[in-house]
Image (cartoon, rainbow, N blue to C red; front, side, top):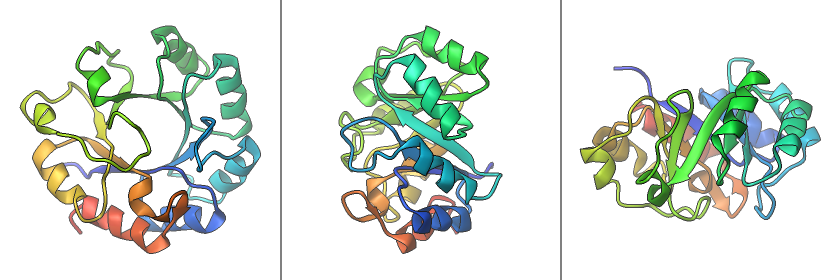
Length: 201
């Protein structure tokens, strides 16, 4: 069985970025969508990305923002990957890939039910309210899992992630609020604990 892909999202400080790098996580996420307590600038993201292991995928999270702005920020932050978490058309994903970025298509469990996603996108399935730290009923995913590589998000913690990985069998998991001591503030120990739990270590 392949190792579970782990993405730690909403990183805003050098200490947290260092913890992600040391934990052995596969990807680090930076939020550029407005309105989140985890939103940072491209300049800050670039400095944080430069401090982690070069093997770690650097992901920018955007939501219903103009594509030109997404491309400008992604380039300025020196990202490898763009995650779109809104109602963006397939043409946006196609252009991102043409510009050299990997893509993640993030959708709520409600949107997923009617989705016909392009197989070239990795799919991230989240709760209806992303970033809120709430679990959703995963029984639908157990019975009819998505095709291809997909990532489970929404309410994951070190205490529940292993059970969900074993039950739903996603290719990867994504966490933000589940490794925080308070809203928007990452706990370095929880980052380590989450990665180990996700992989059954």
